[in-house]
Length: 414
Length: 204
Image (cartoon, rainbow over all chains, first blue to last red; front, side, top):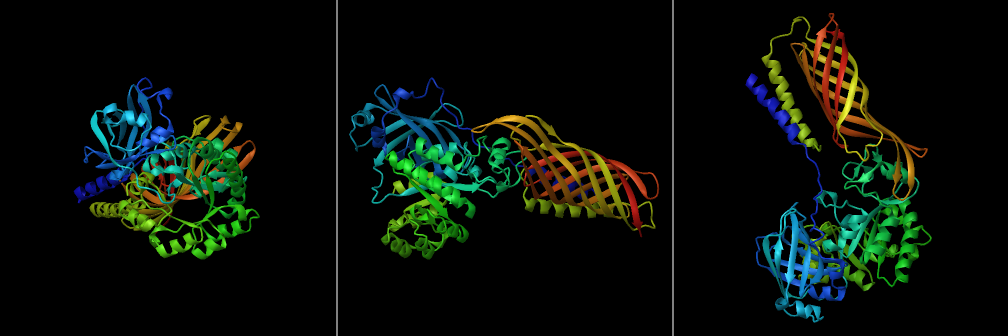
């Protein structure tokens, strides 16, 4: 009997202490400044675009699988894969007569990561690329490493074909500014840093969450309440709406140390530091609508002045928020994305319908709305096995996802 | 720490088995005429956080004086159930900071909690161990540049403790204990040292 008791107590203690877990962001490595590409070695966008394509790899069992998509996306060269949703955020430069791609790779479905450096010499097509000649077979040779170690695992990428031809624009919309804290990115969800890196993950659009502080400042924050999932703070507990903006700035930071951004700061970052073409503002309360619409209008006007193609959409996820939107005097000129049924999409004159993906592709409804000039974005698709359902028949105009690297691979490699 | 409720439940089941098996293994109590009793316990001591998720350590004071109150139902001085409440300070801060985009801000803040737990306990040879689960009412008071906010929330949590009990009369005992607590949702862990007085109100 005593033995049984001892065993049971050991079980209790083992369960208690084995239950301890900590979310830790992956520290992204970087090449030493001496070895990495210098600003004067970077090649212009017009040449970087010539690297776009679907490439085969020499080692299908490696982290990149058998096939990758390379695509210029904003200021990054984005490499995306199906296997483990691996991606690489790269810069392209020229050193001597070779084109260099270098940066880091990461598996979004694990914490595997490391450095990668690839080179294309004249024999493999660098001369043609630098001369601005599109097409043709090109090949990168180099290596990838694990963690902060220098790349030592051989990797060869051979372009097999161009990216799929786009008949209409398509939006790869990164959730929470680019990704979630639970995927251990080194930038926090809904942070300015995450917005800046979203294109490196393969996205060309972002969804961000806007809610109000007690003094009416719209900030980016997903949850209704503060919690250690999202912030570091001794004192921020309970509803976000209890606290003033000053209190939030003084008392807490996001998980990776960033400040909780305002919606204004987020839109400023999108406009000045990215090439993103669409921002979906997920409205978290009816009261937030009145604060979001003037900012939306201000930044849309600035984008137009700069000749920038940028859509900023007010999200309408529920009936009370839809009512607040329809009651706002500026709603007629305020583009919106409506998550409710088609009747409400039309009633709000939303330019985009955003149904939950679990309702299926709904192709007839998609075509009906498309005939009215509206687009359809599905949310939130994270599983590779379902992506094809929504891309087939040119169905979706965009997909909201926690894994833009996956959606980008599936879309551009079709 | 991130402990799921399912694991807590499993711990509770295993603990129940454990306490019942120990109770079966022990000899009857010293007072063979008393089967059950209800006692009130009060205590005070010092509580300190051992795991938090701080933003700033400027002007930070961790822990402080804490108080506990329990009503315990006991069986032959061995297996018992208790309801526990009290007051536990977690941290307090007083500092001036430069907030990005705002400027200099003066900060005063306090975080404390009131537990409301159900404890399962086992007492033998003057040693008492207990495991508990329930809810903690967290209270945050902050003042930043003369703007004050008080915010509260209820969070699930657990506790575990071990102590010694010394009877000083038929109905009164004194003791000391050390305890560990985890407020699951906010991932706060605390340790407490306390002395306590136990007064047996009723027995039958």
